[in-house]
Image 1 (spheres, rainbow, N blue to C red):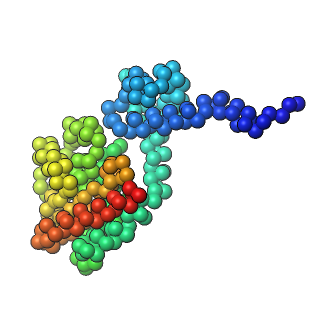
Image 2 (image 1 turned 60 degrees about the vertical axis):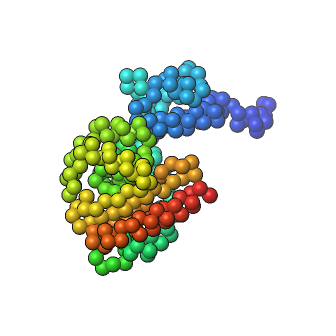
Image 3 (image 1 turned 45 degrees about the vertical axis):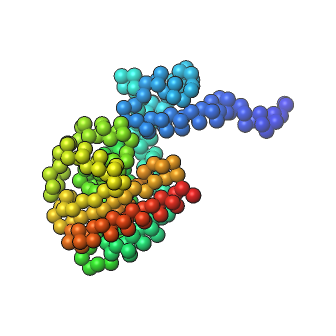
Length: 264
C-alpha cells in the first residue's frame, strides 16, 4: 500500500469539506449579514462576496438547516443558532476586563457609578456587562447583567445613535414605547434625541428614566471606528446636574482613553 505524503492526507479532507476557502466564505456571509437588519438575497450576497451563486448555495443550505441562517421570501438573515454562538463568545469576552481600569478611573474622577453597556440587537436592548459602584453612600446601584430598553436610558440611546443606520431606522419605525419613563418618549422626540447625540458625540439624561436619576454616556470605539460599547456614569440628579459640564468632559475623556486600548 502506497503511503500518501502528509500534505495529501490533509488536502483530501479539505477537498471533501470545501477547504479553507469555504470557511472564509462562511465568515464573510456572517459579517455582511450582521451589517443589515433587512437581510440579503442570494444575488446580493453573490455580488457582495464575489462568489458564484452555485457555490454560495452549497454553503447556505446547511447553514439554514442548522439554524445559523434563516431563509424567507428569498431573503437570508442571521439565525438563532448564530446568536446563541455569539452569546457564548461574548460570555468569554475579555473586553470588560480591558476597560475596567478606565471605569475605575471614571468612578474615581466623577464620584459616580460607572457602567459599561453593549447593544443586543436581537432583543433591542442594552445590557450592562461591567459596573463599578461610585464611592458615595447614596449612589446608583444595579447588578451586572441588568438590561434596559434602548430608548429609556442615556447609554441605550447612545448605542442606538451609533448603530448601523439601516438598523436604527428600522428600530425607529417599529418601536413601541412599553416602558414608562419619567419624561414621556415619542418617535419624534427619540429621533431628535438620536440626531443630537450624533452631533454632540455623547448622550445625557436628567430625570428621564426615573425622577432623581441622571446619566451621561459616551461611545467606546474599536480599531475600525465602530462603537462597541457605551461608557457611562449614573447618579442622583442633584449631583449630576450641578456638575453637568465638567462631568461630560470627564466621561468623554475616559471613553476616548478606553477606545485607545482597542485601537492598539
